[in-house]
Length: 268
Image (cartoon, rainbow, N blue to C red; front, side):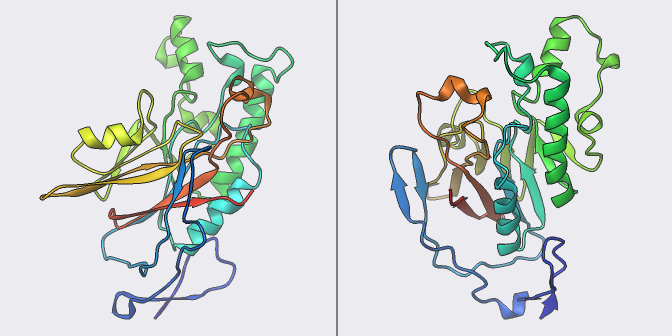
């Protein structure tokens, strides 16, 4: 046995080593298929195994800060602890940038400076909880940069994401590969379509009303597609465009050793 150094655990706890592999935690009570929200939850009855040299990745859904659910961070921290994760990936659209949208914006909403200040404050809560993380760049994250490009502003005048959001240890990338699993935001398609064309398992966000895990098997391989849900507050004005559609699938995910995906919905 060895002590857990998880920064989110208040008291040190005993963690099972490879020699003592056993049942650490079972994910239960969420085998459910909800056609209304296009959510598929899986029951897992196998022990969670730890493999040397592999990772336990917490995947955080689209936040669209400052329009994220306040309770979603607690859910992500709980999942991080439950699976003893050692890596964190934000799947994209960390911020919303509603004020600079190419679509109609709310004239009664926050102005650019105020929305950015609020977004930085919301993001900082996550930065305090997860000071080291990989952040996938989503289409909403790029919004202000696209506006600058359209306005003819040279790149030399533009700050990078970590400088704007005051998250110096976070790494911002278009996509990431961890333990042969591809993490990307997902504009222009779904996880179900992407993993059929790739040579590896995929995890994506972008689609707020979908959260599922799908497997594809052949004689020579097995791979999965995981569609992460979201952490948005659907009541905020930034999502008025979707009010006539489905409610969001509020959830996060975990990938163990690059082989075992888990989808964990948040109790609302």
